[in-house]
Length: 306
Image (cartoon, rainbow, N blue to C red; front, side, top):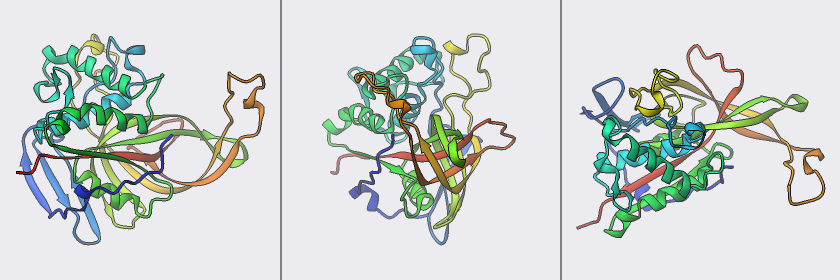
């Protein structure tokens, strides 16, 4: 579950001018051009220098089938290490010394994704709040030498201007975005049946608007998925285009059984509520479920002053 927490950070109050500068490091399409345009009623933000590591890897539980959260967080750490030179990592493993496109680093990166899973209390999946804990652990080496590192989670439900705030956070660095997969529930409701986490790299829209155009990196999708030794090699980087539309959703949540009690709680009635979500659609999608964005984690770092 995503906690409804918006933590004000001093770093987030710094005004950013409109910027467009070439960045040949990583991006789709290449060369990537960073854009930070937050002036006026419309906005456009695009980040460069973000990795797109695969979650499907030999050595992870179930070949990484549920490691979207740790893989996405690795992408965030890659950005801060390679683009901002932040000393993030674990013990002797430093993210800035690793190249996901270098096969020689593949196993170390797999182990790093596994480490993030441990720190995020992976239990067949990861929660957004626990991924923020994993970020705090991975950024400790930077904080130990004077860096500032902050993170918080934002829920779509109750957010005054979800799209506008998302653009401002993305202007600081990549964010993790989570969407749930919903299917028809009782009484014309929608019921969540699982979720997925991706790395957002671009957003366009209007402040106070109801529609966003986004691009994101999906750790679970790749052109070579299921082909040859795909579990032992890094796929080509790619970004996906999608539209996000604000929706009022009548959500049904069933009661889960508590194995520590004699009664079967799952037999009791579930709960209903109206929530605000953002439906995400991709060109030509034939997904059998409705994909609803539920929120995101944002991250920010700054080097020592002086």
